[in-house]
Amino acid sequence: MKGIKGVAAVLTVALWGCAAALVGAGAGAGVGTYSYIKGELKVTYAQEYYKVVSATEQAVKDLGFTLKAEKKDGLRCRIKAKMADGTGVKLAIDKVSESITQLKIKVGWWGNKGVSIQIMRAIEKRMGVSPAVQSTSGKKD
Image (cartoon, rainbow, N blue to C red):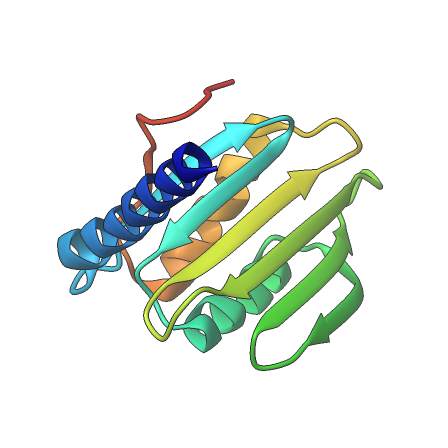
């Protein structure tokens, strides 16, 4: 039992360390990191939640997507949209802390990395931040 608690403590410190490194490295520039796993692009930004939500809503319009549904509160935002060809797009924005926000993008049923990255870049353009870089930890596509 002590071994499990020890592993959990190490993982907790490691995860908080990654978030702190992200904030320290990109708090001024809004630098983020992304990974693409199982058809979903996951991006973590050193940005306030409402800034990411606003930029995402604007990017959906910029890209000419049809908004199908949006649900949001002070912690989570879920957007469902359709591309011109009918492909569905799901965007999930979660407040991690006051200055850390996570964005998830899923295009179609199986995912589409190229289109997901284009959507991410449109959101970053609206936020006025440097492009997120691919995470070097964990699984890659």
